[in-house]
Amino acid sequence: MPVTPADVPRGPDTTSPPPPLLVAASLAAVEAFVLAALGTLELANLRSIRLTMGITTAAFFLAAAAGLGWCAWSLWKVRRWARGPVVMAQLIQLGLAWNLWAGSTKPLSAGLAVVALVVILGLVHPASTEVLEQDARA
Image 1 (tube, rainbow, N blue to C red):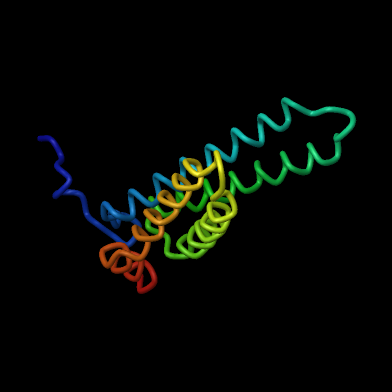
Image 2: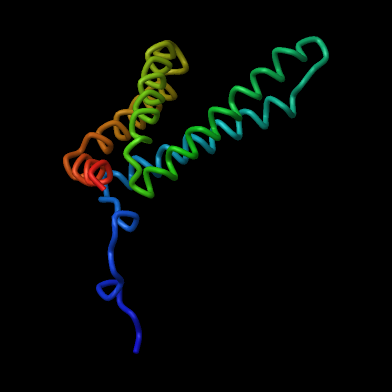
């Protein structure tokens, strides 16, 4: 006899994330992938004239990618602690979008701002807040 999802016992570790939280976690994972790609590209373009700057920049991007990726995965697993670091990353991204709002970088700026706002809205959505607060009580 096949087992259906309704037959599986649910505990605090099997809480399913609501759609707004899934969207926020997915976009944070995409941001982590982009940061990892930027770090890899920086490593691929190392030059002896700026070796130290290239290595530290690549290390920063790769560390930020790892941290944001871990937080995105933790949001998928409905871990409350991951919300704060992801919100902070989005606020930094909004500041970057503000700085890029000039000339030919306006489309990039708008894209960064929209993604950051969607992630923040997904994290503070009532359904997301409810499920994340359940994790705190468990």
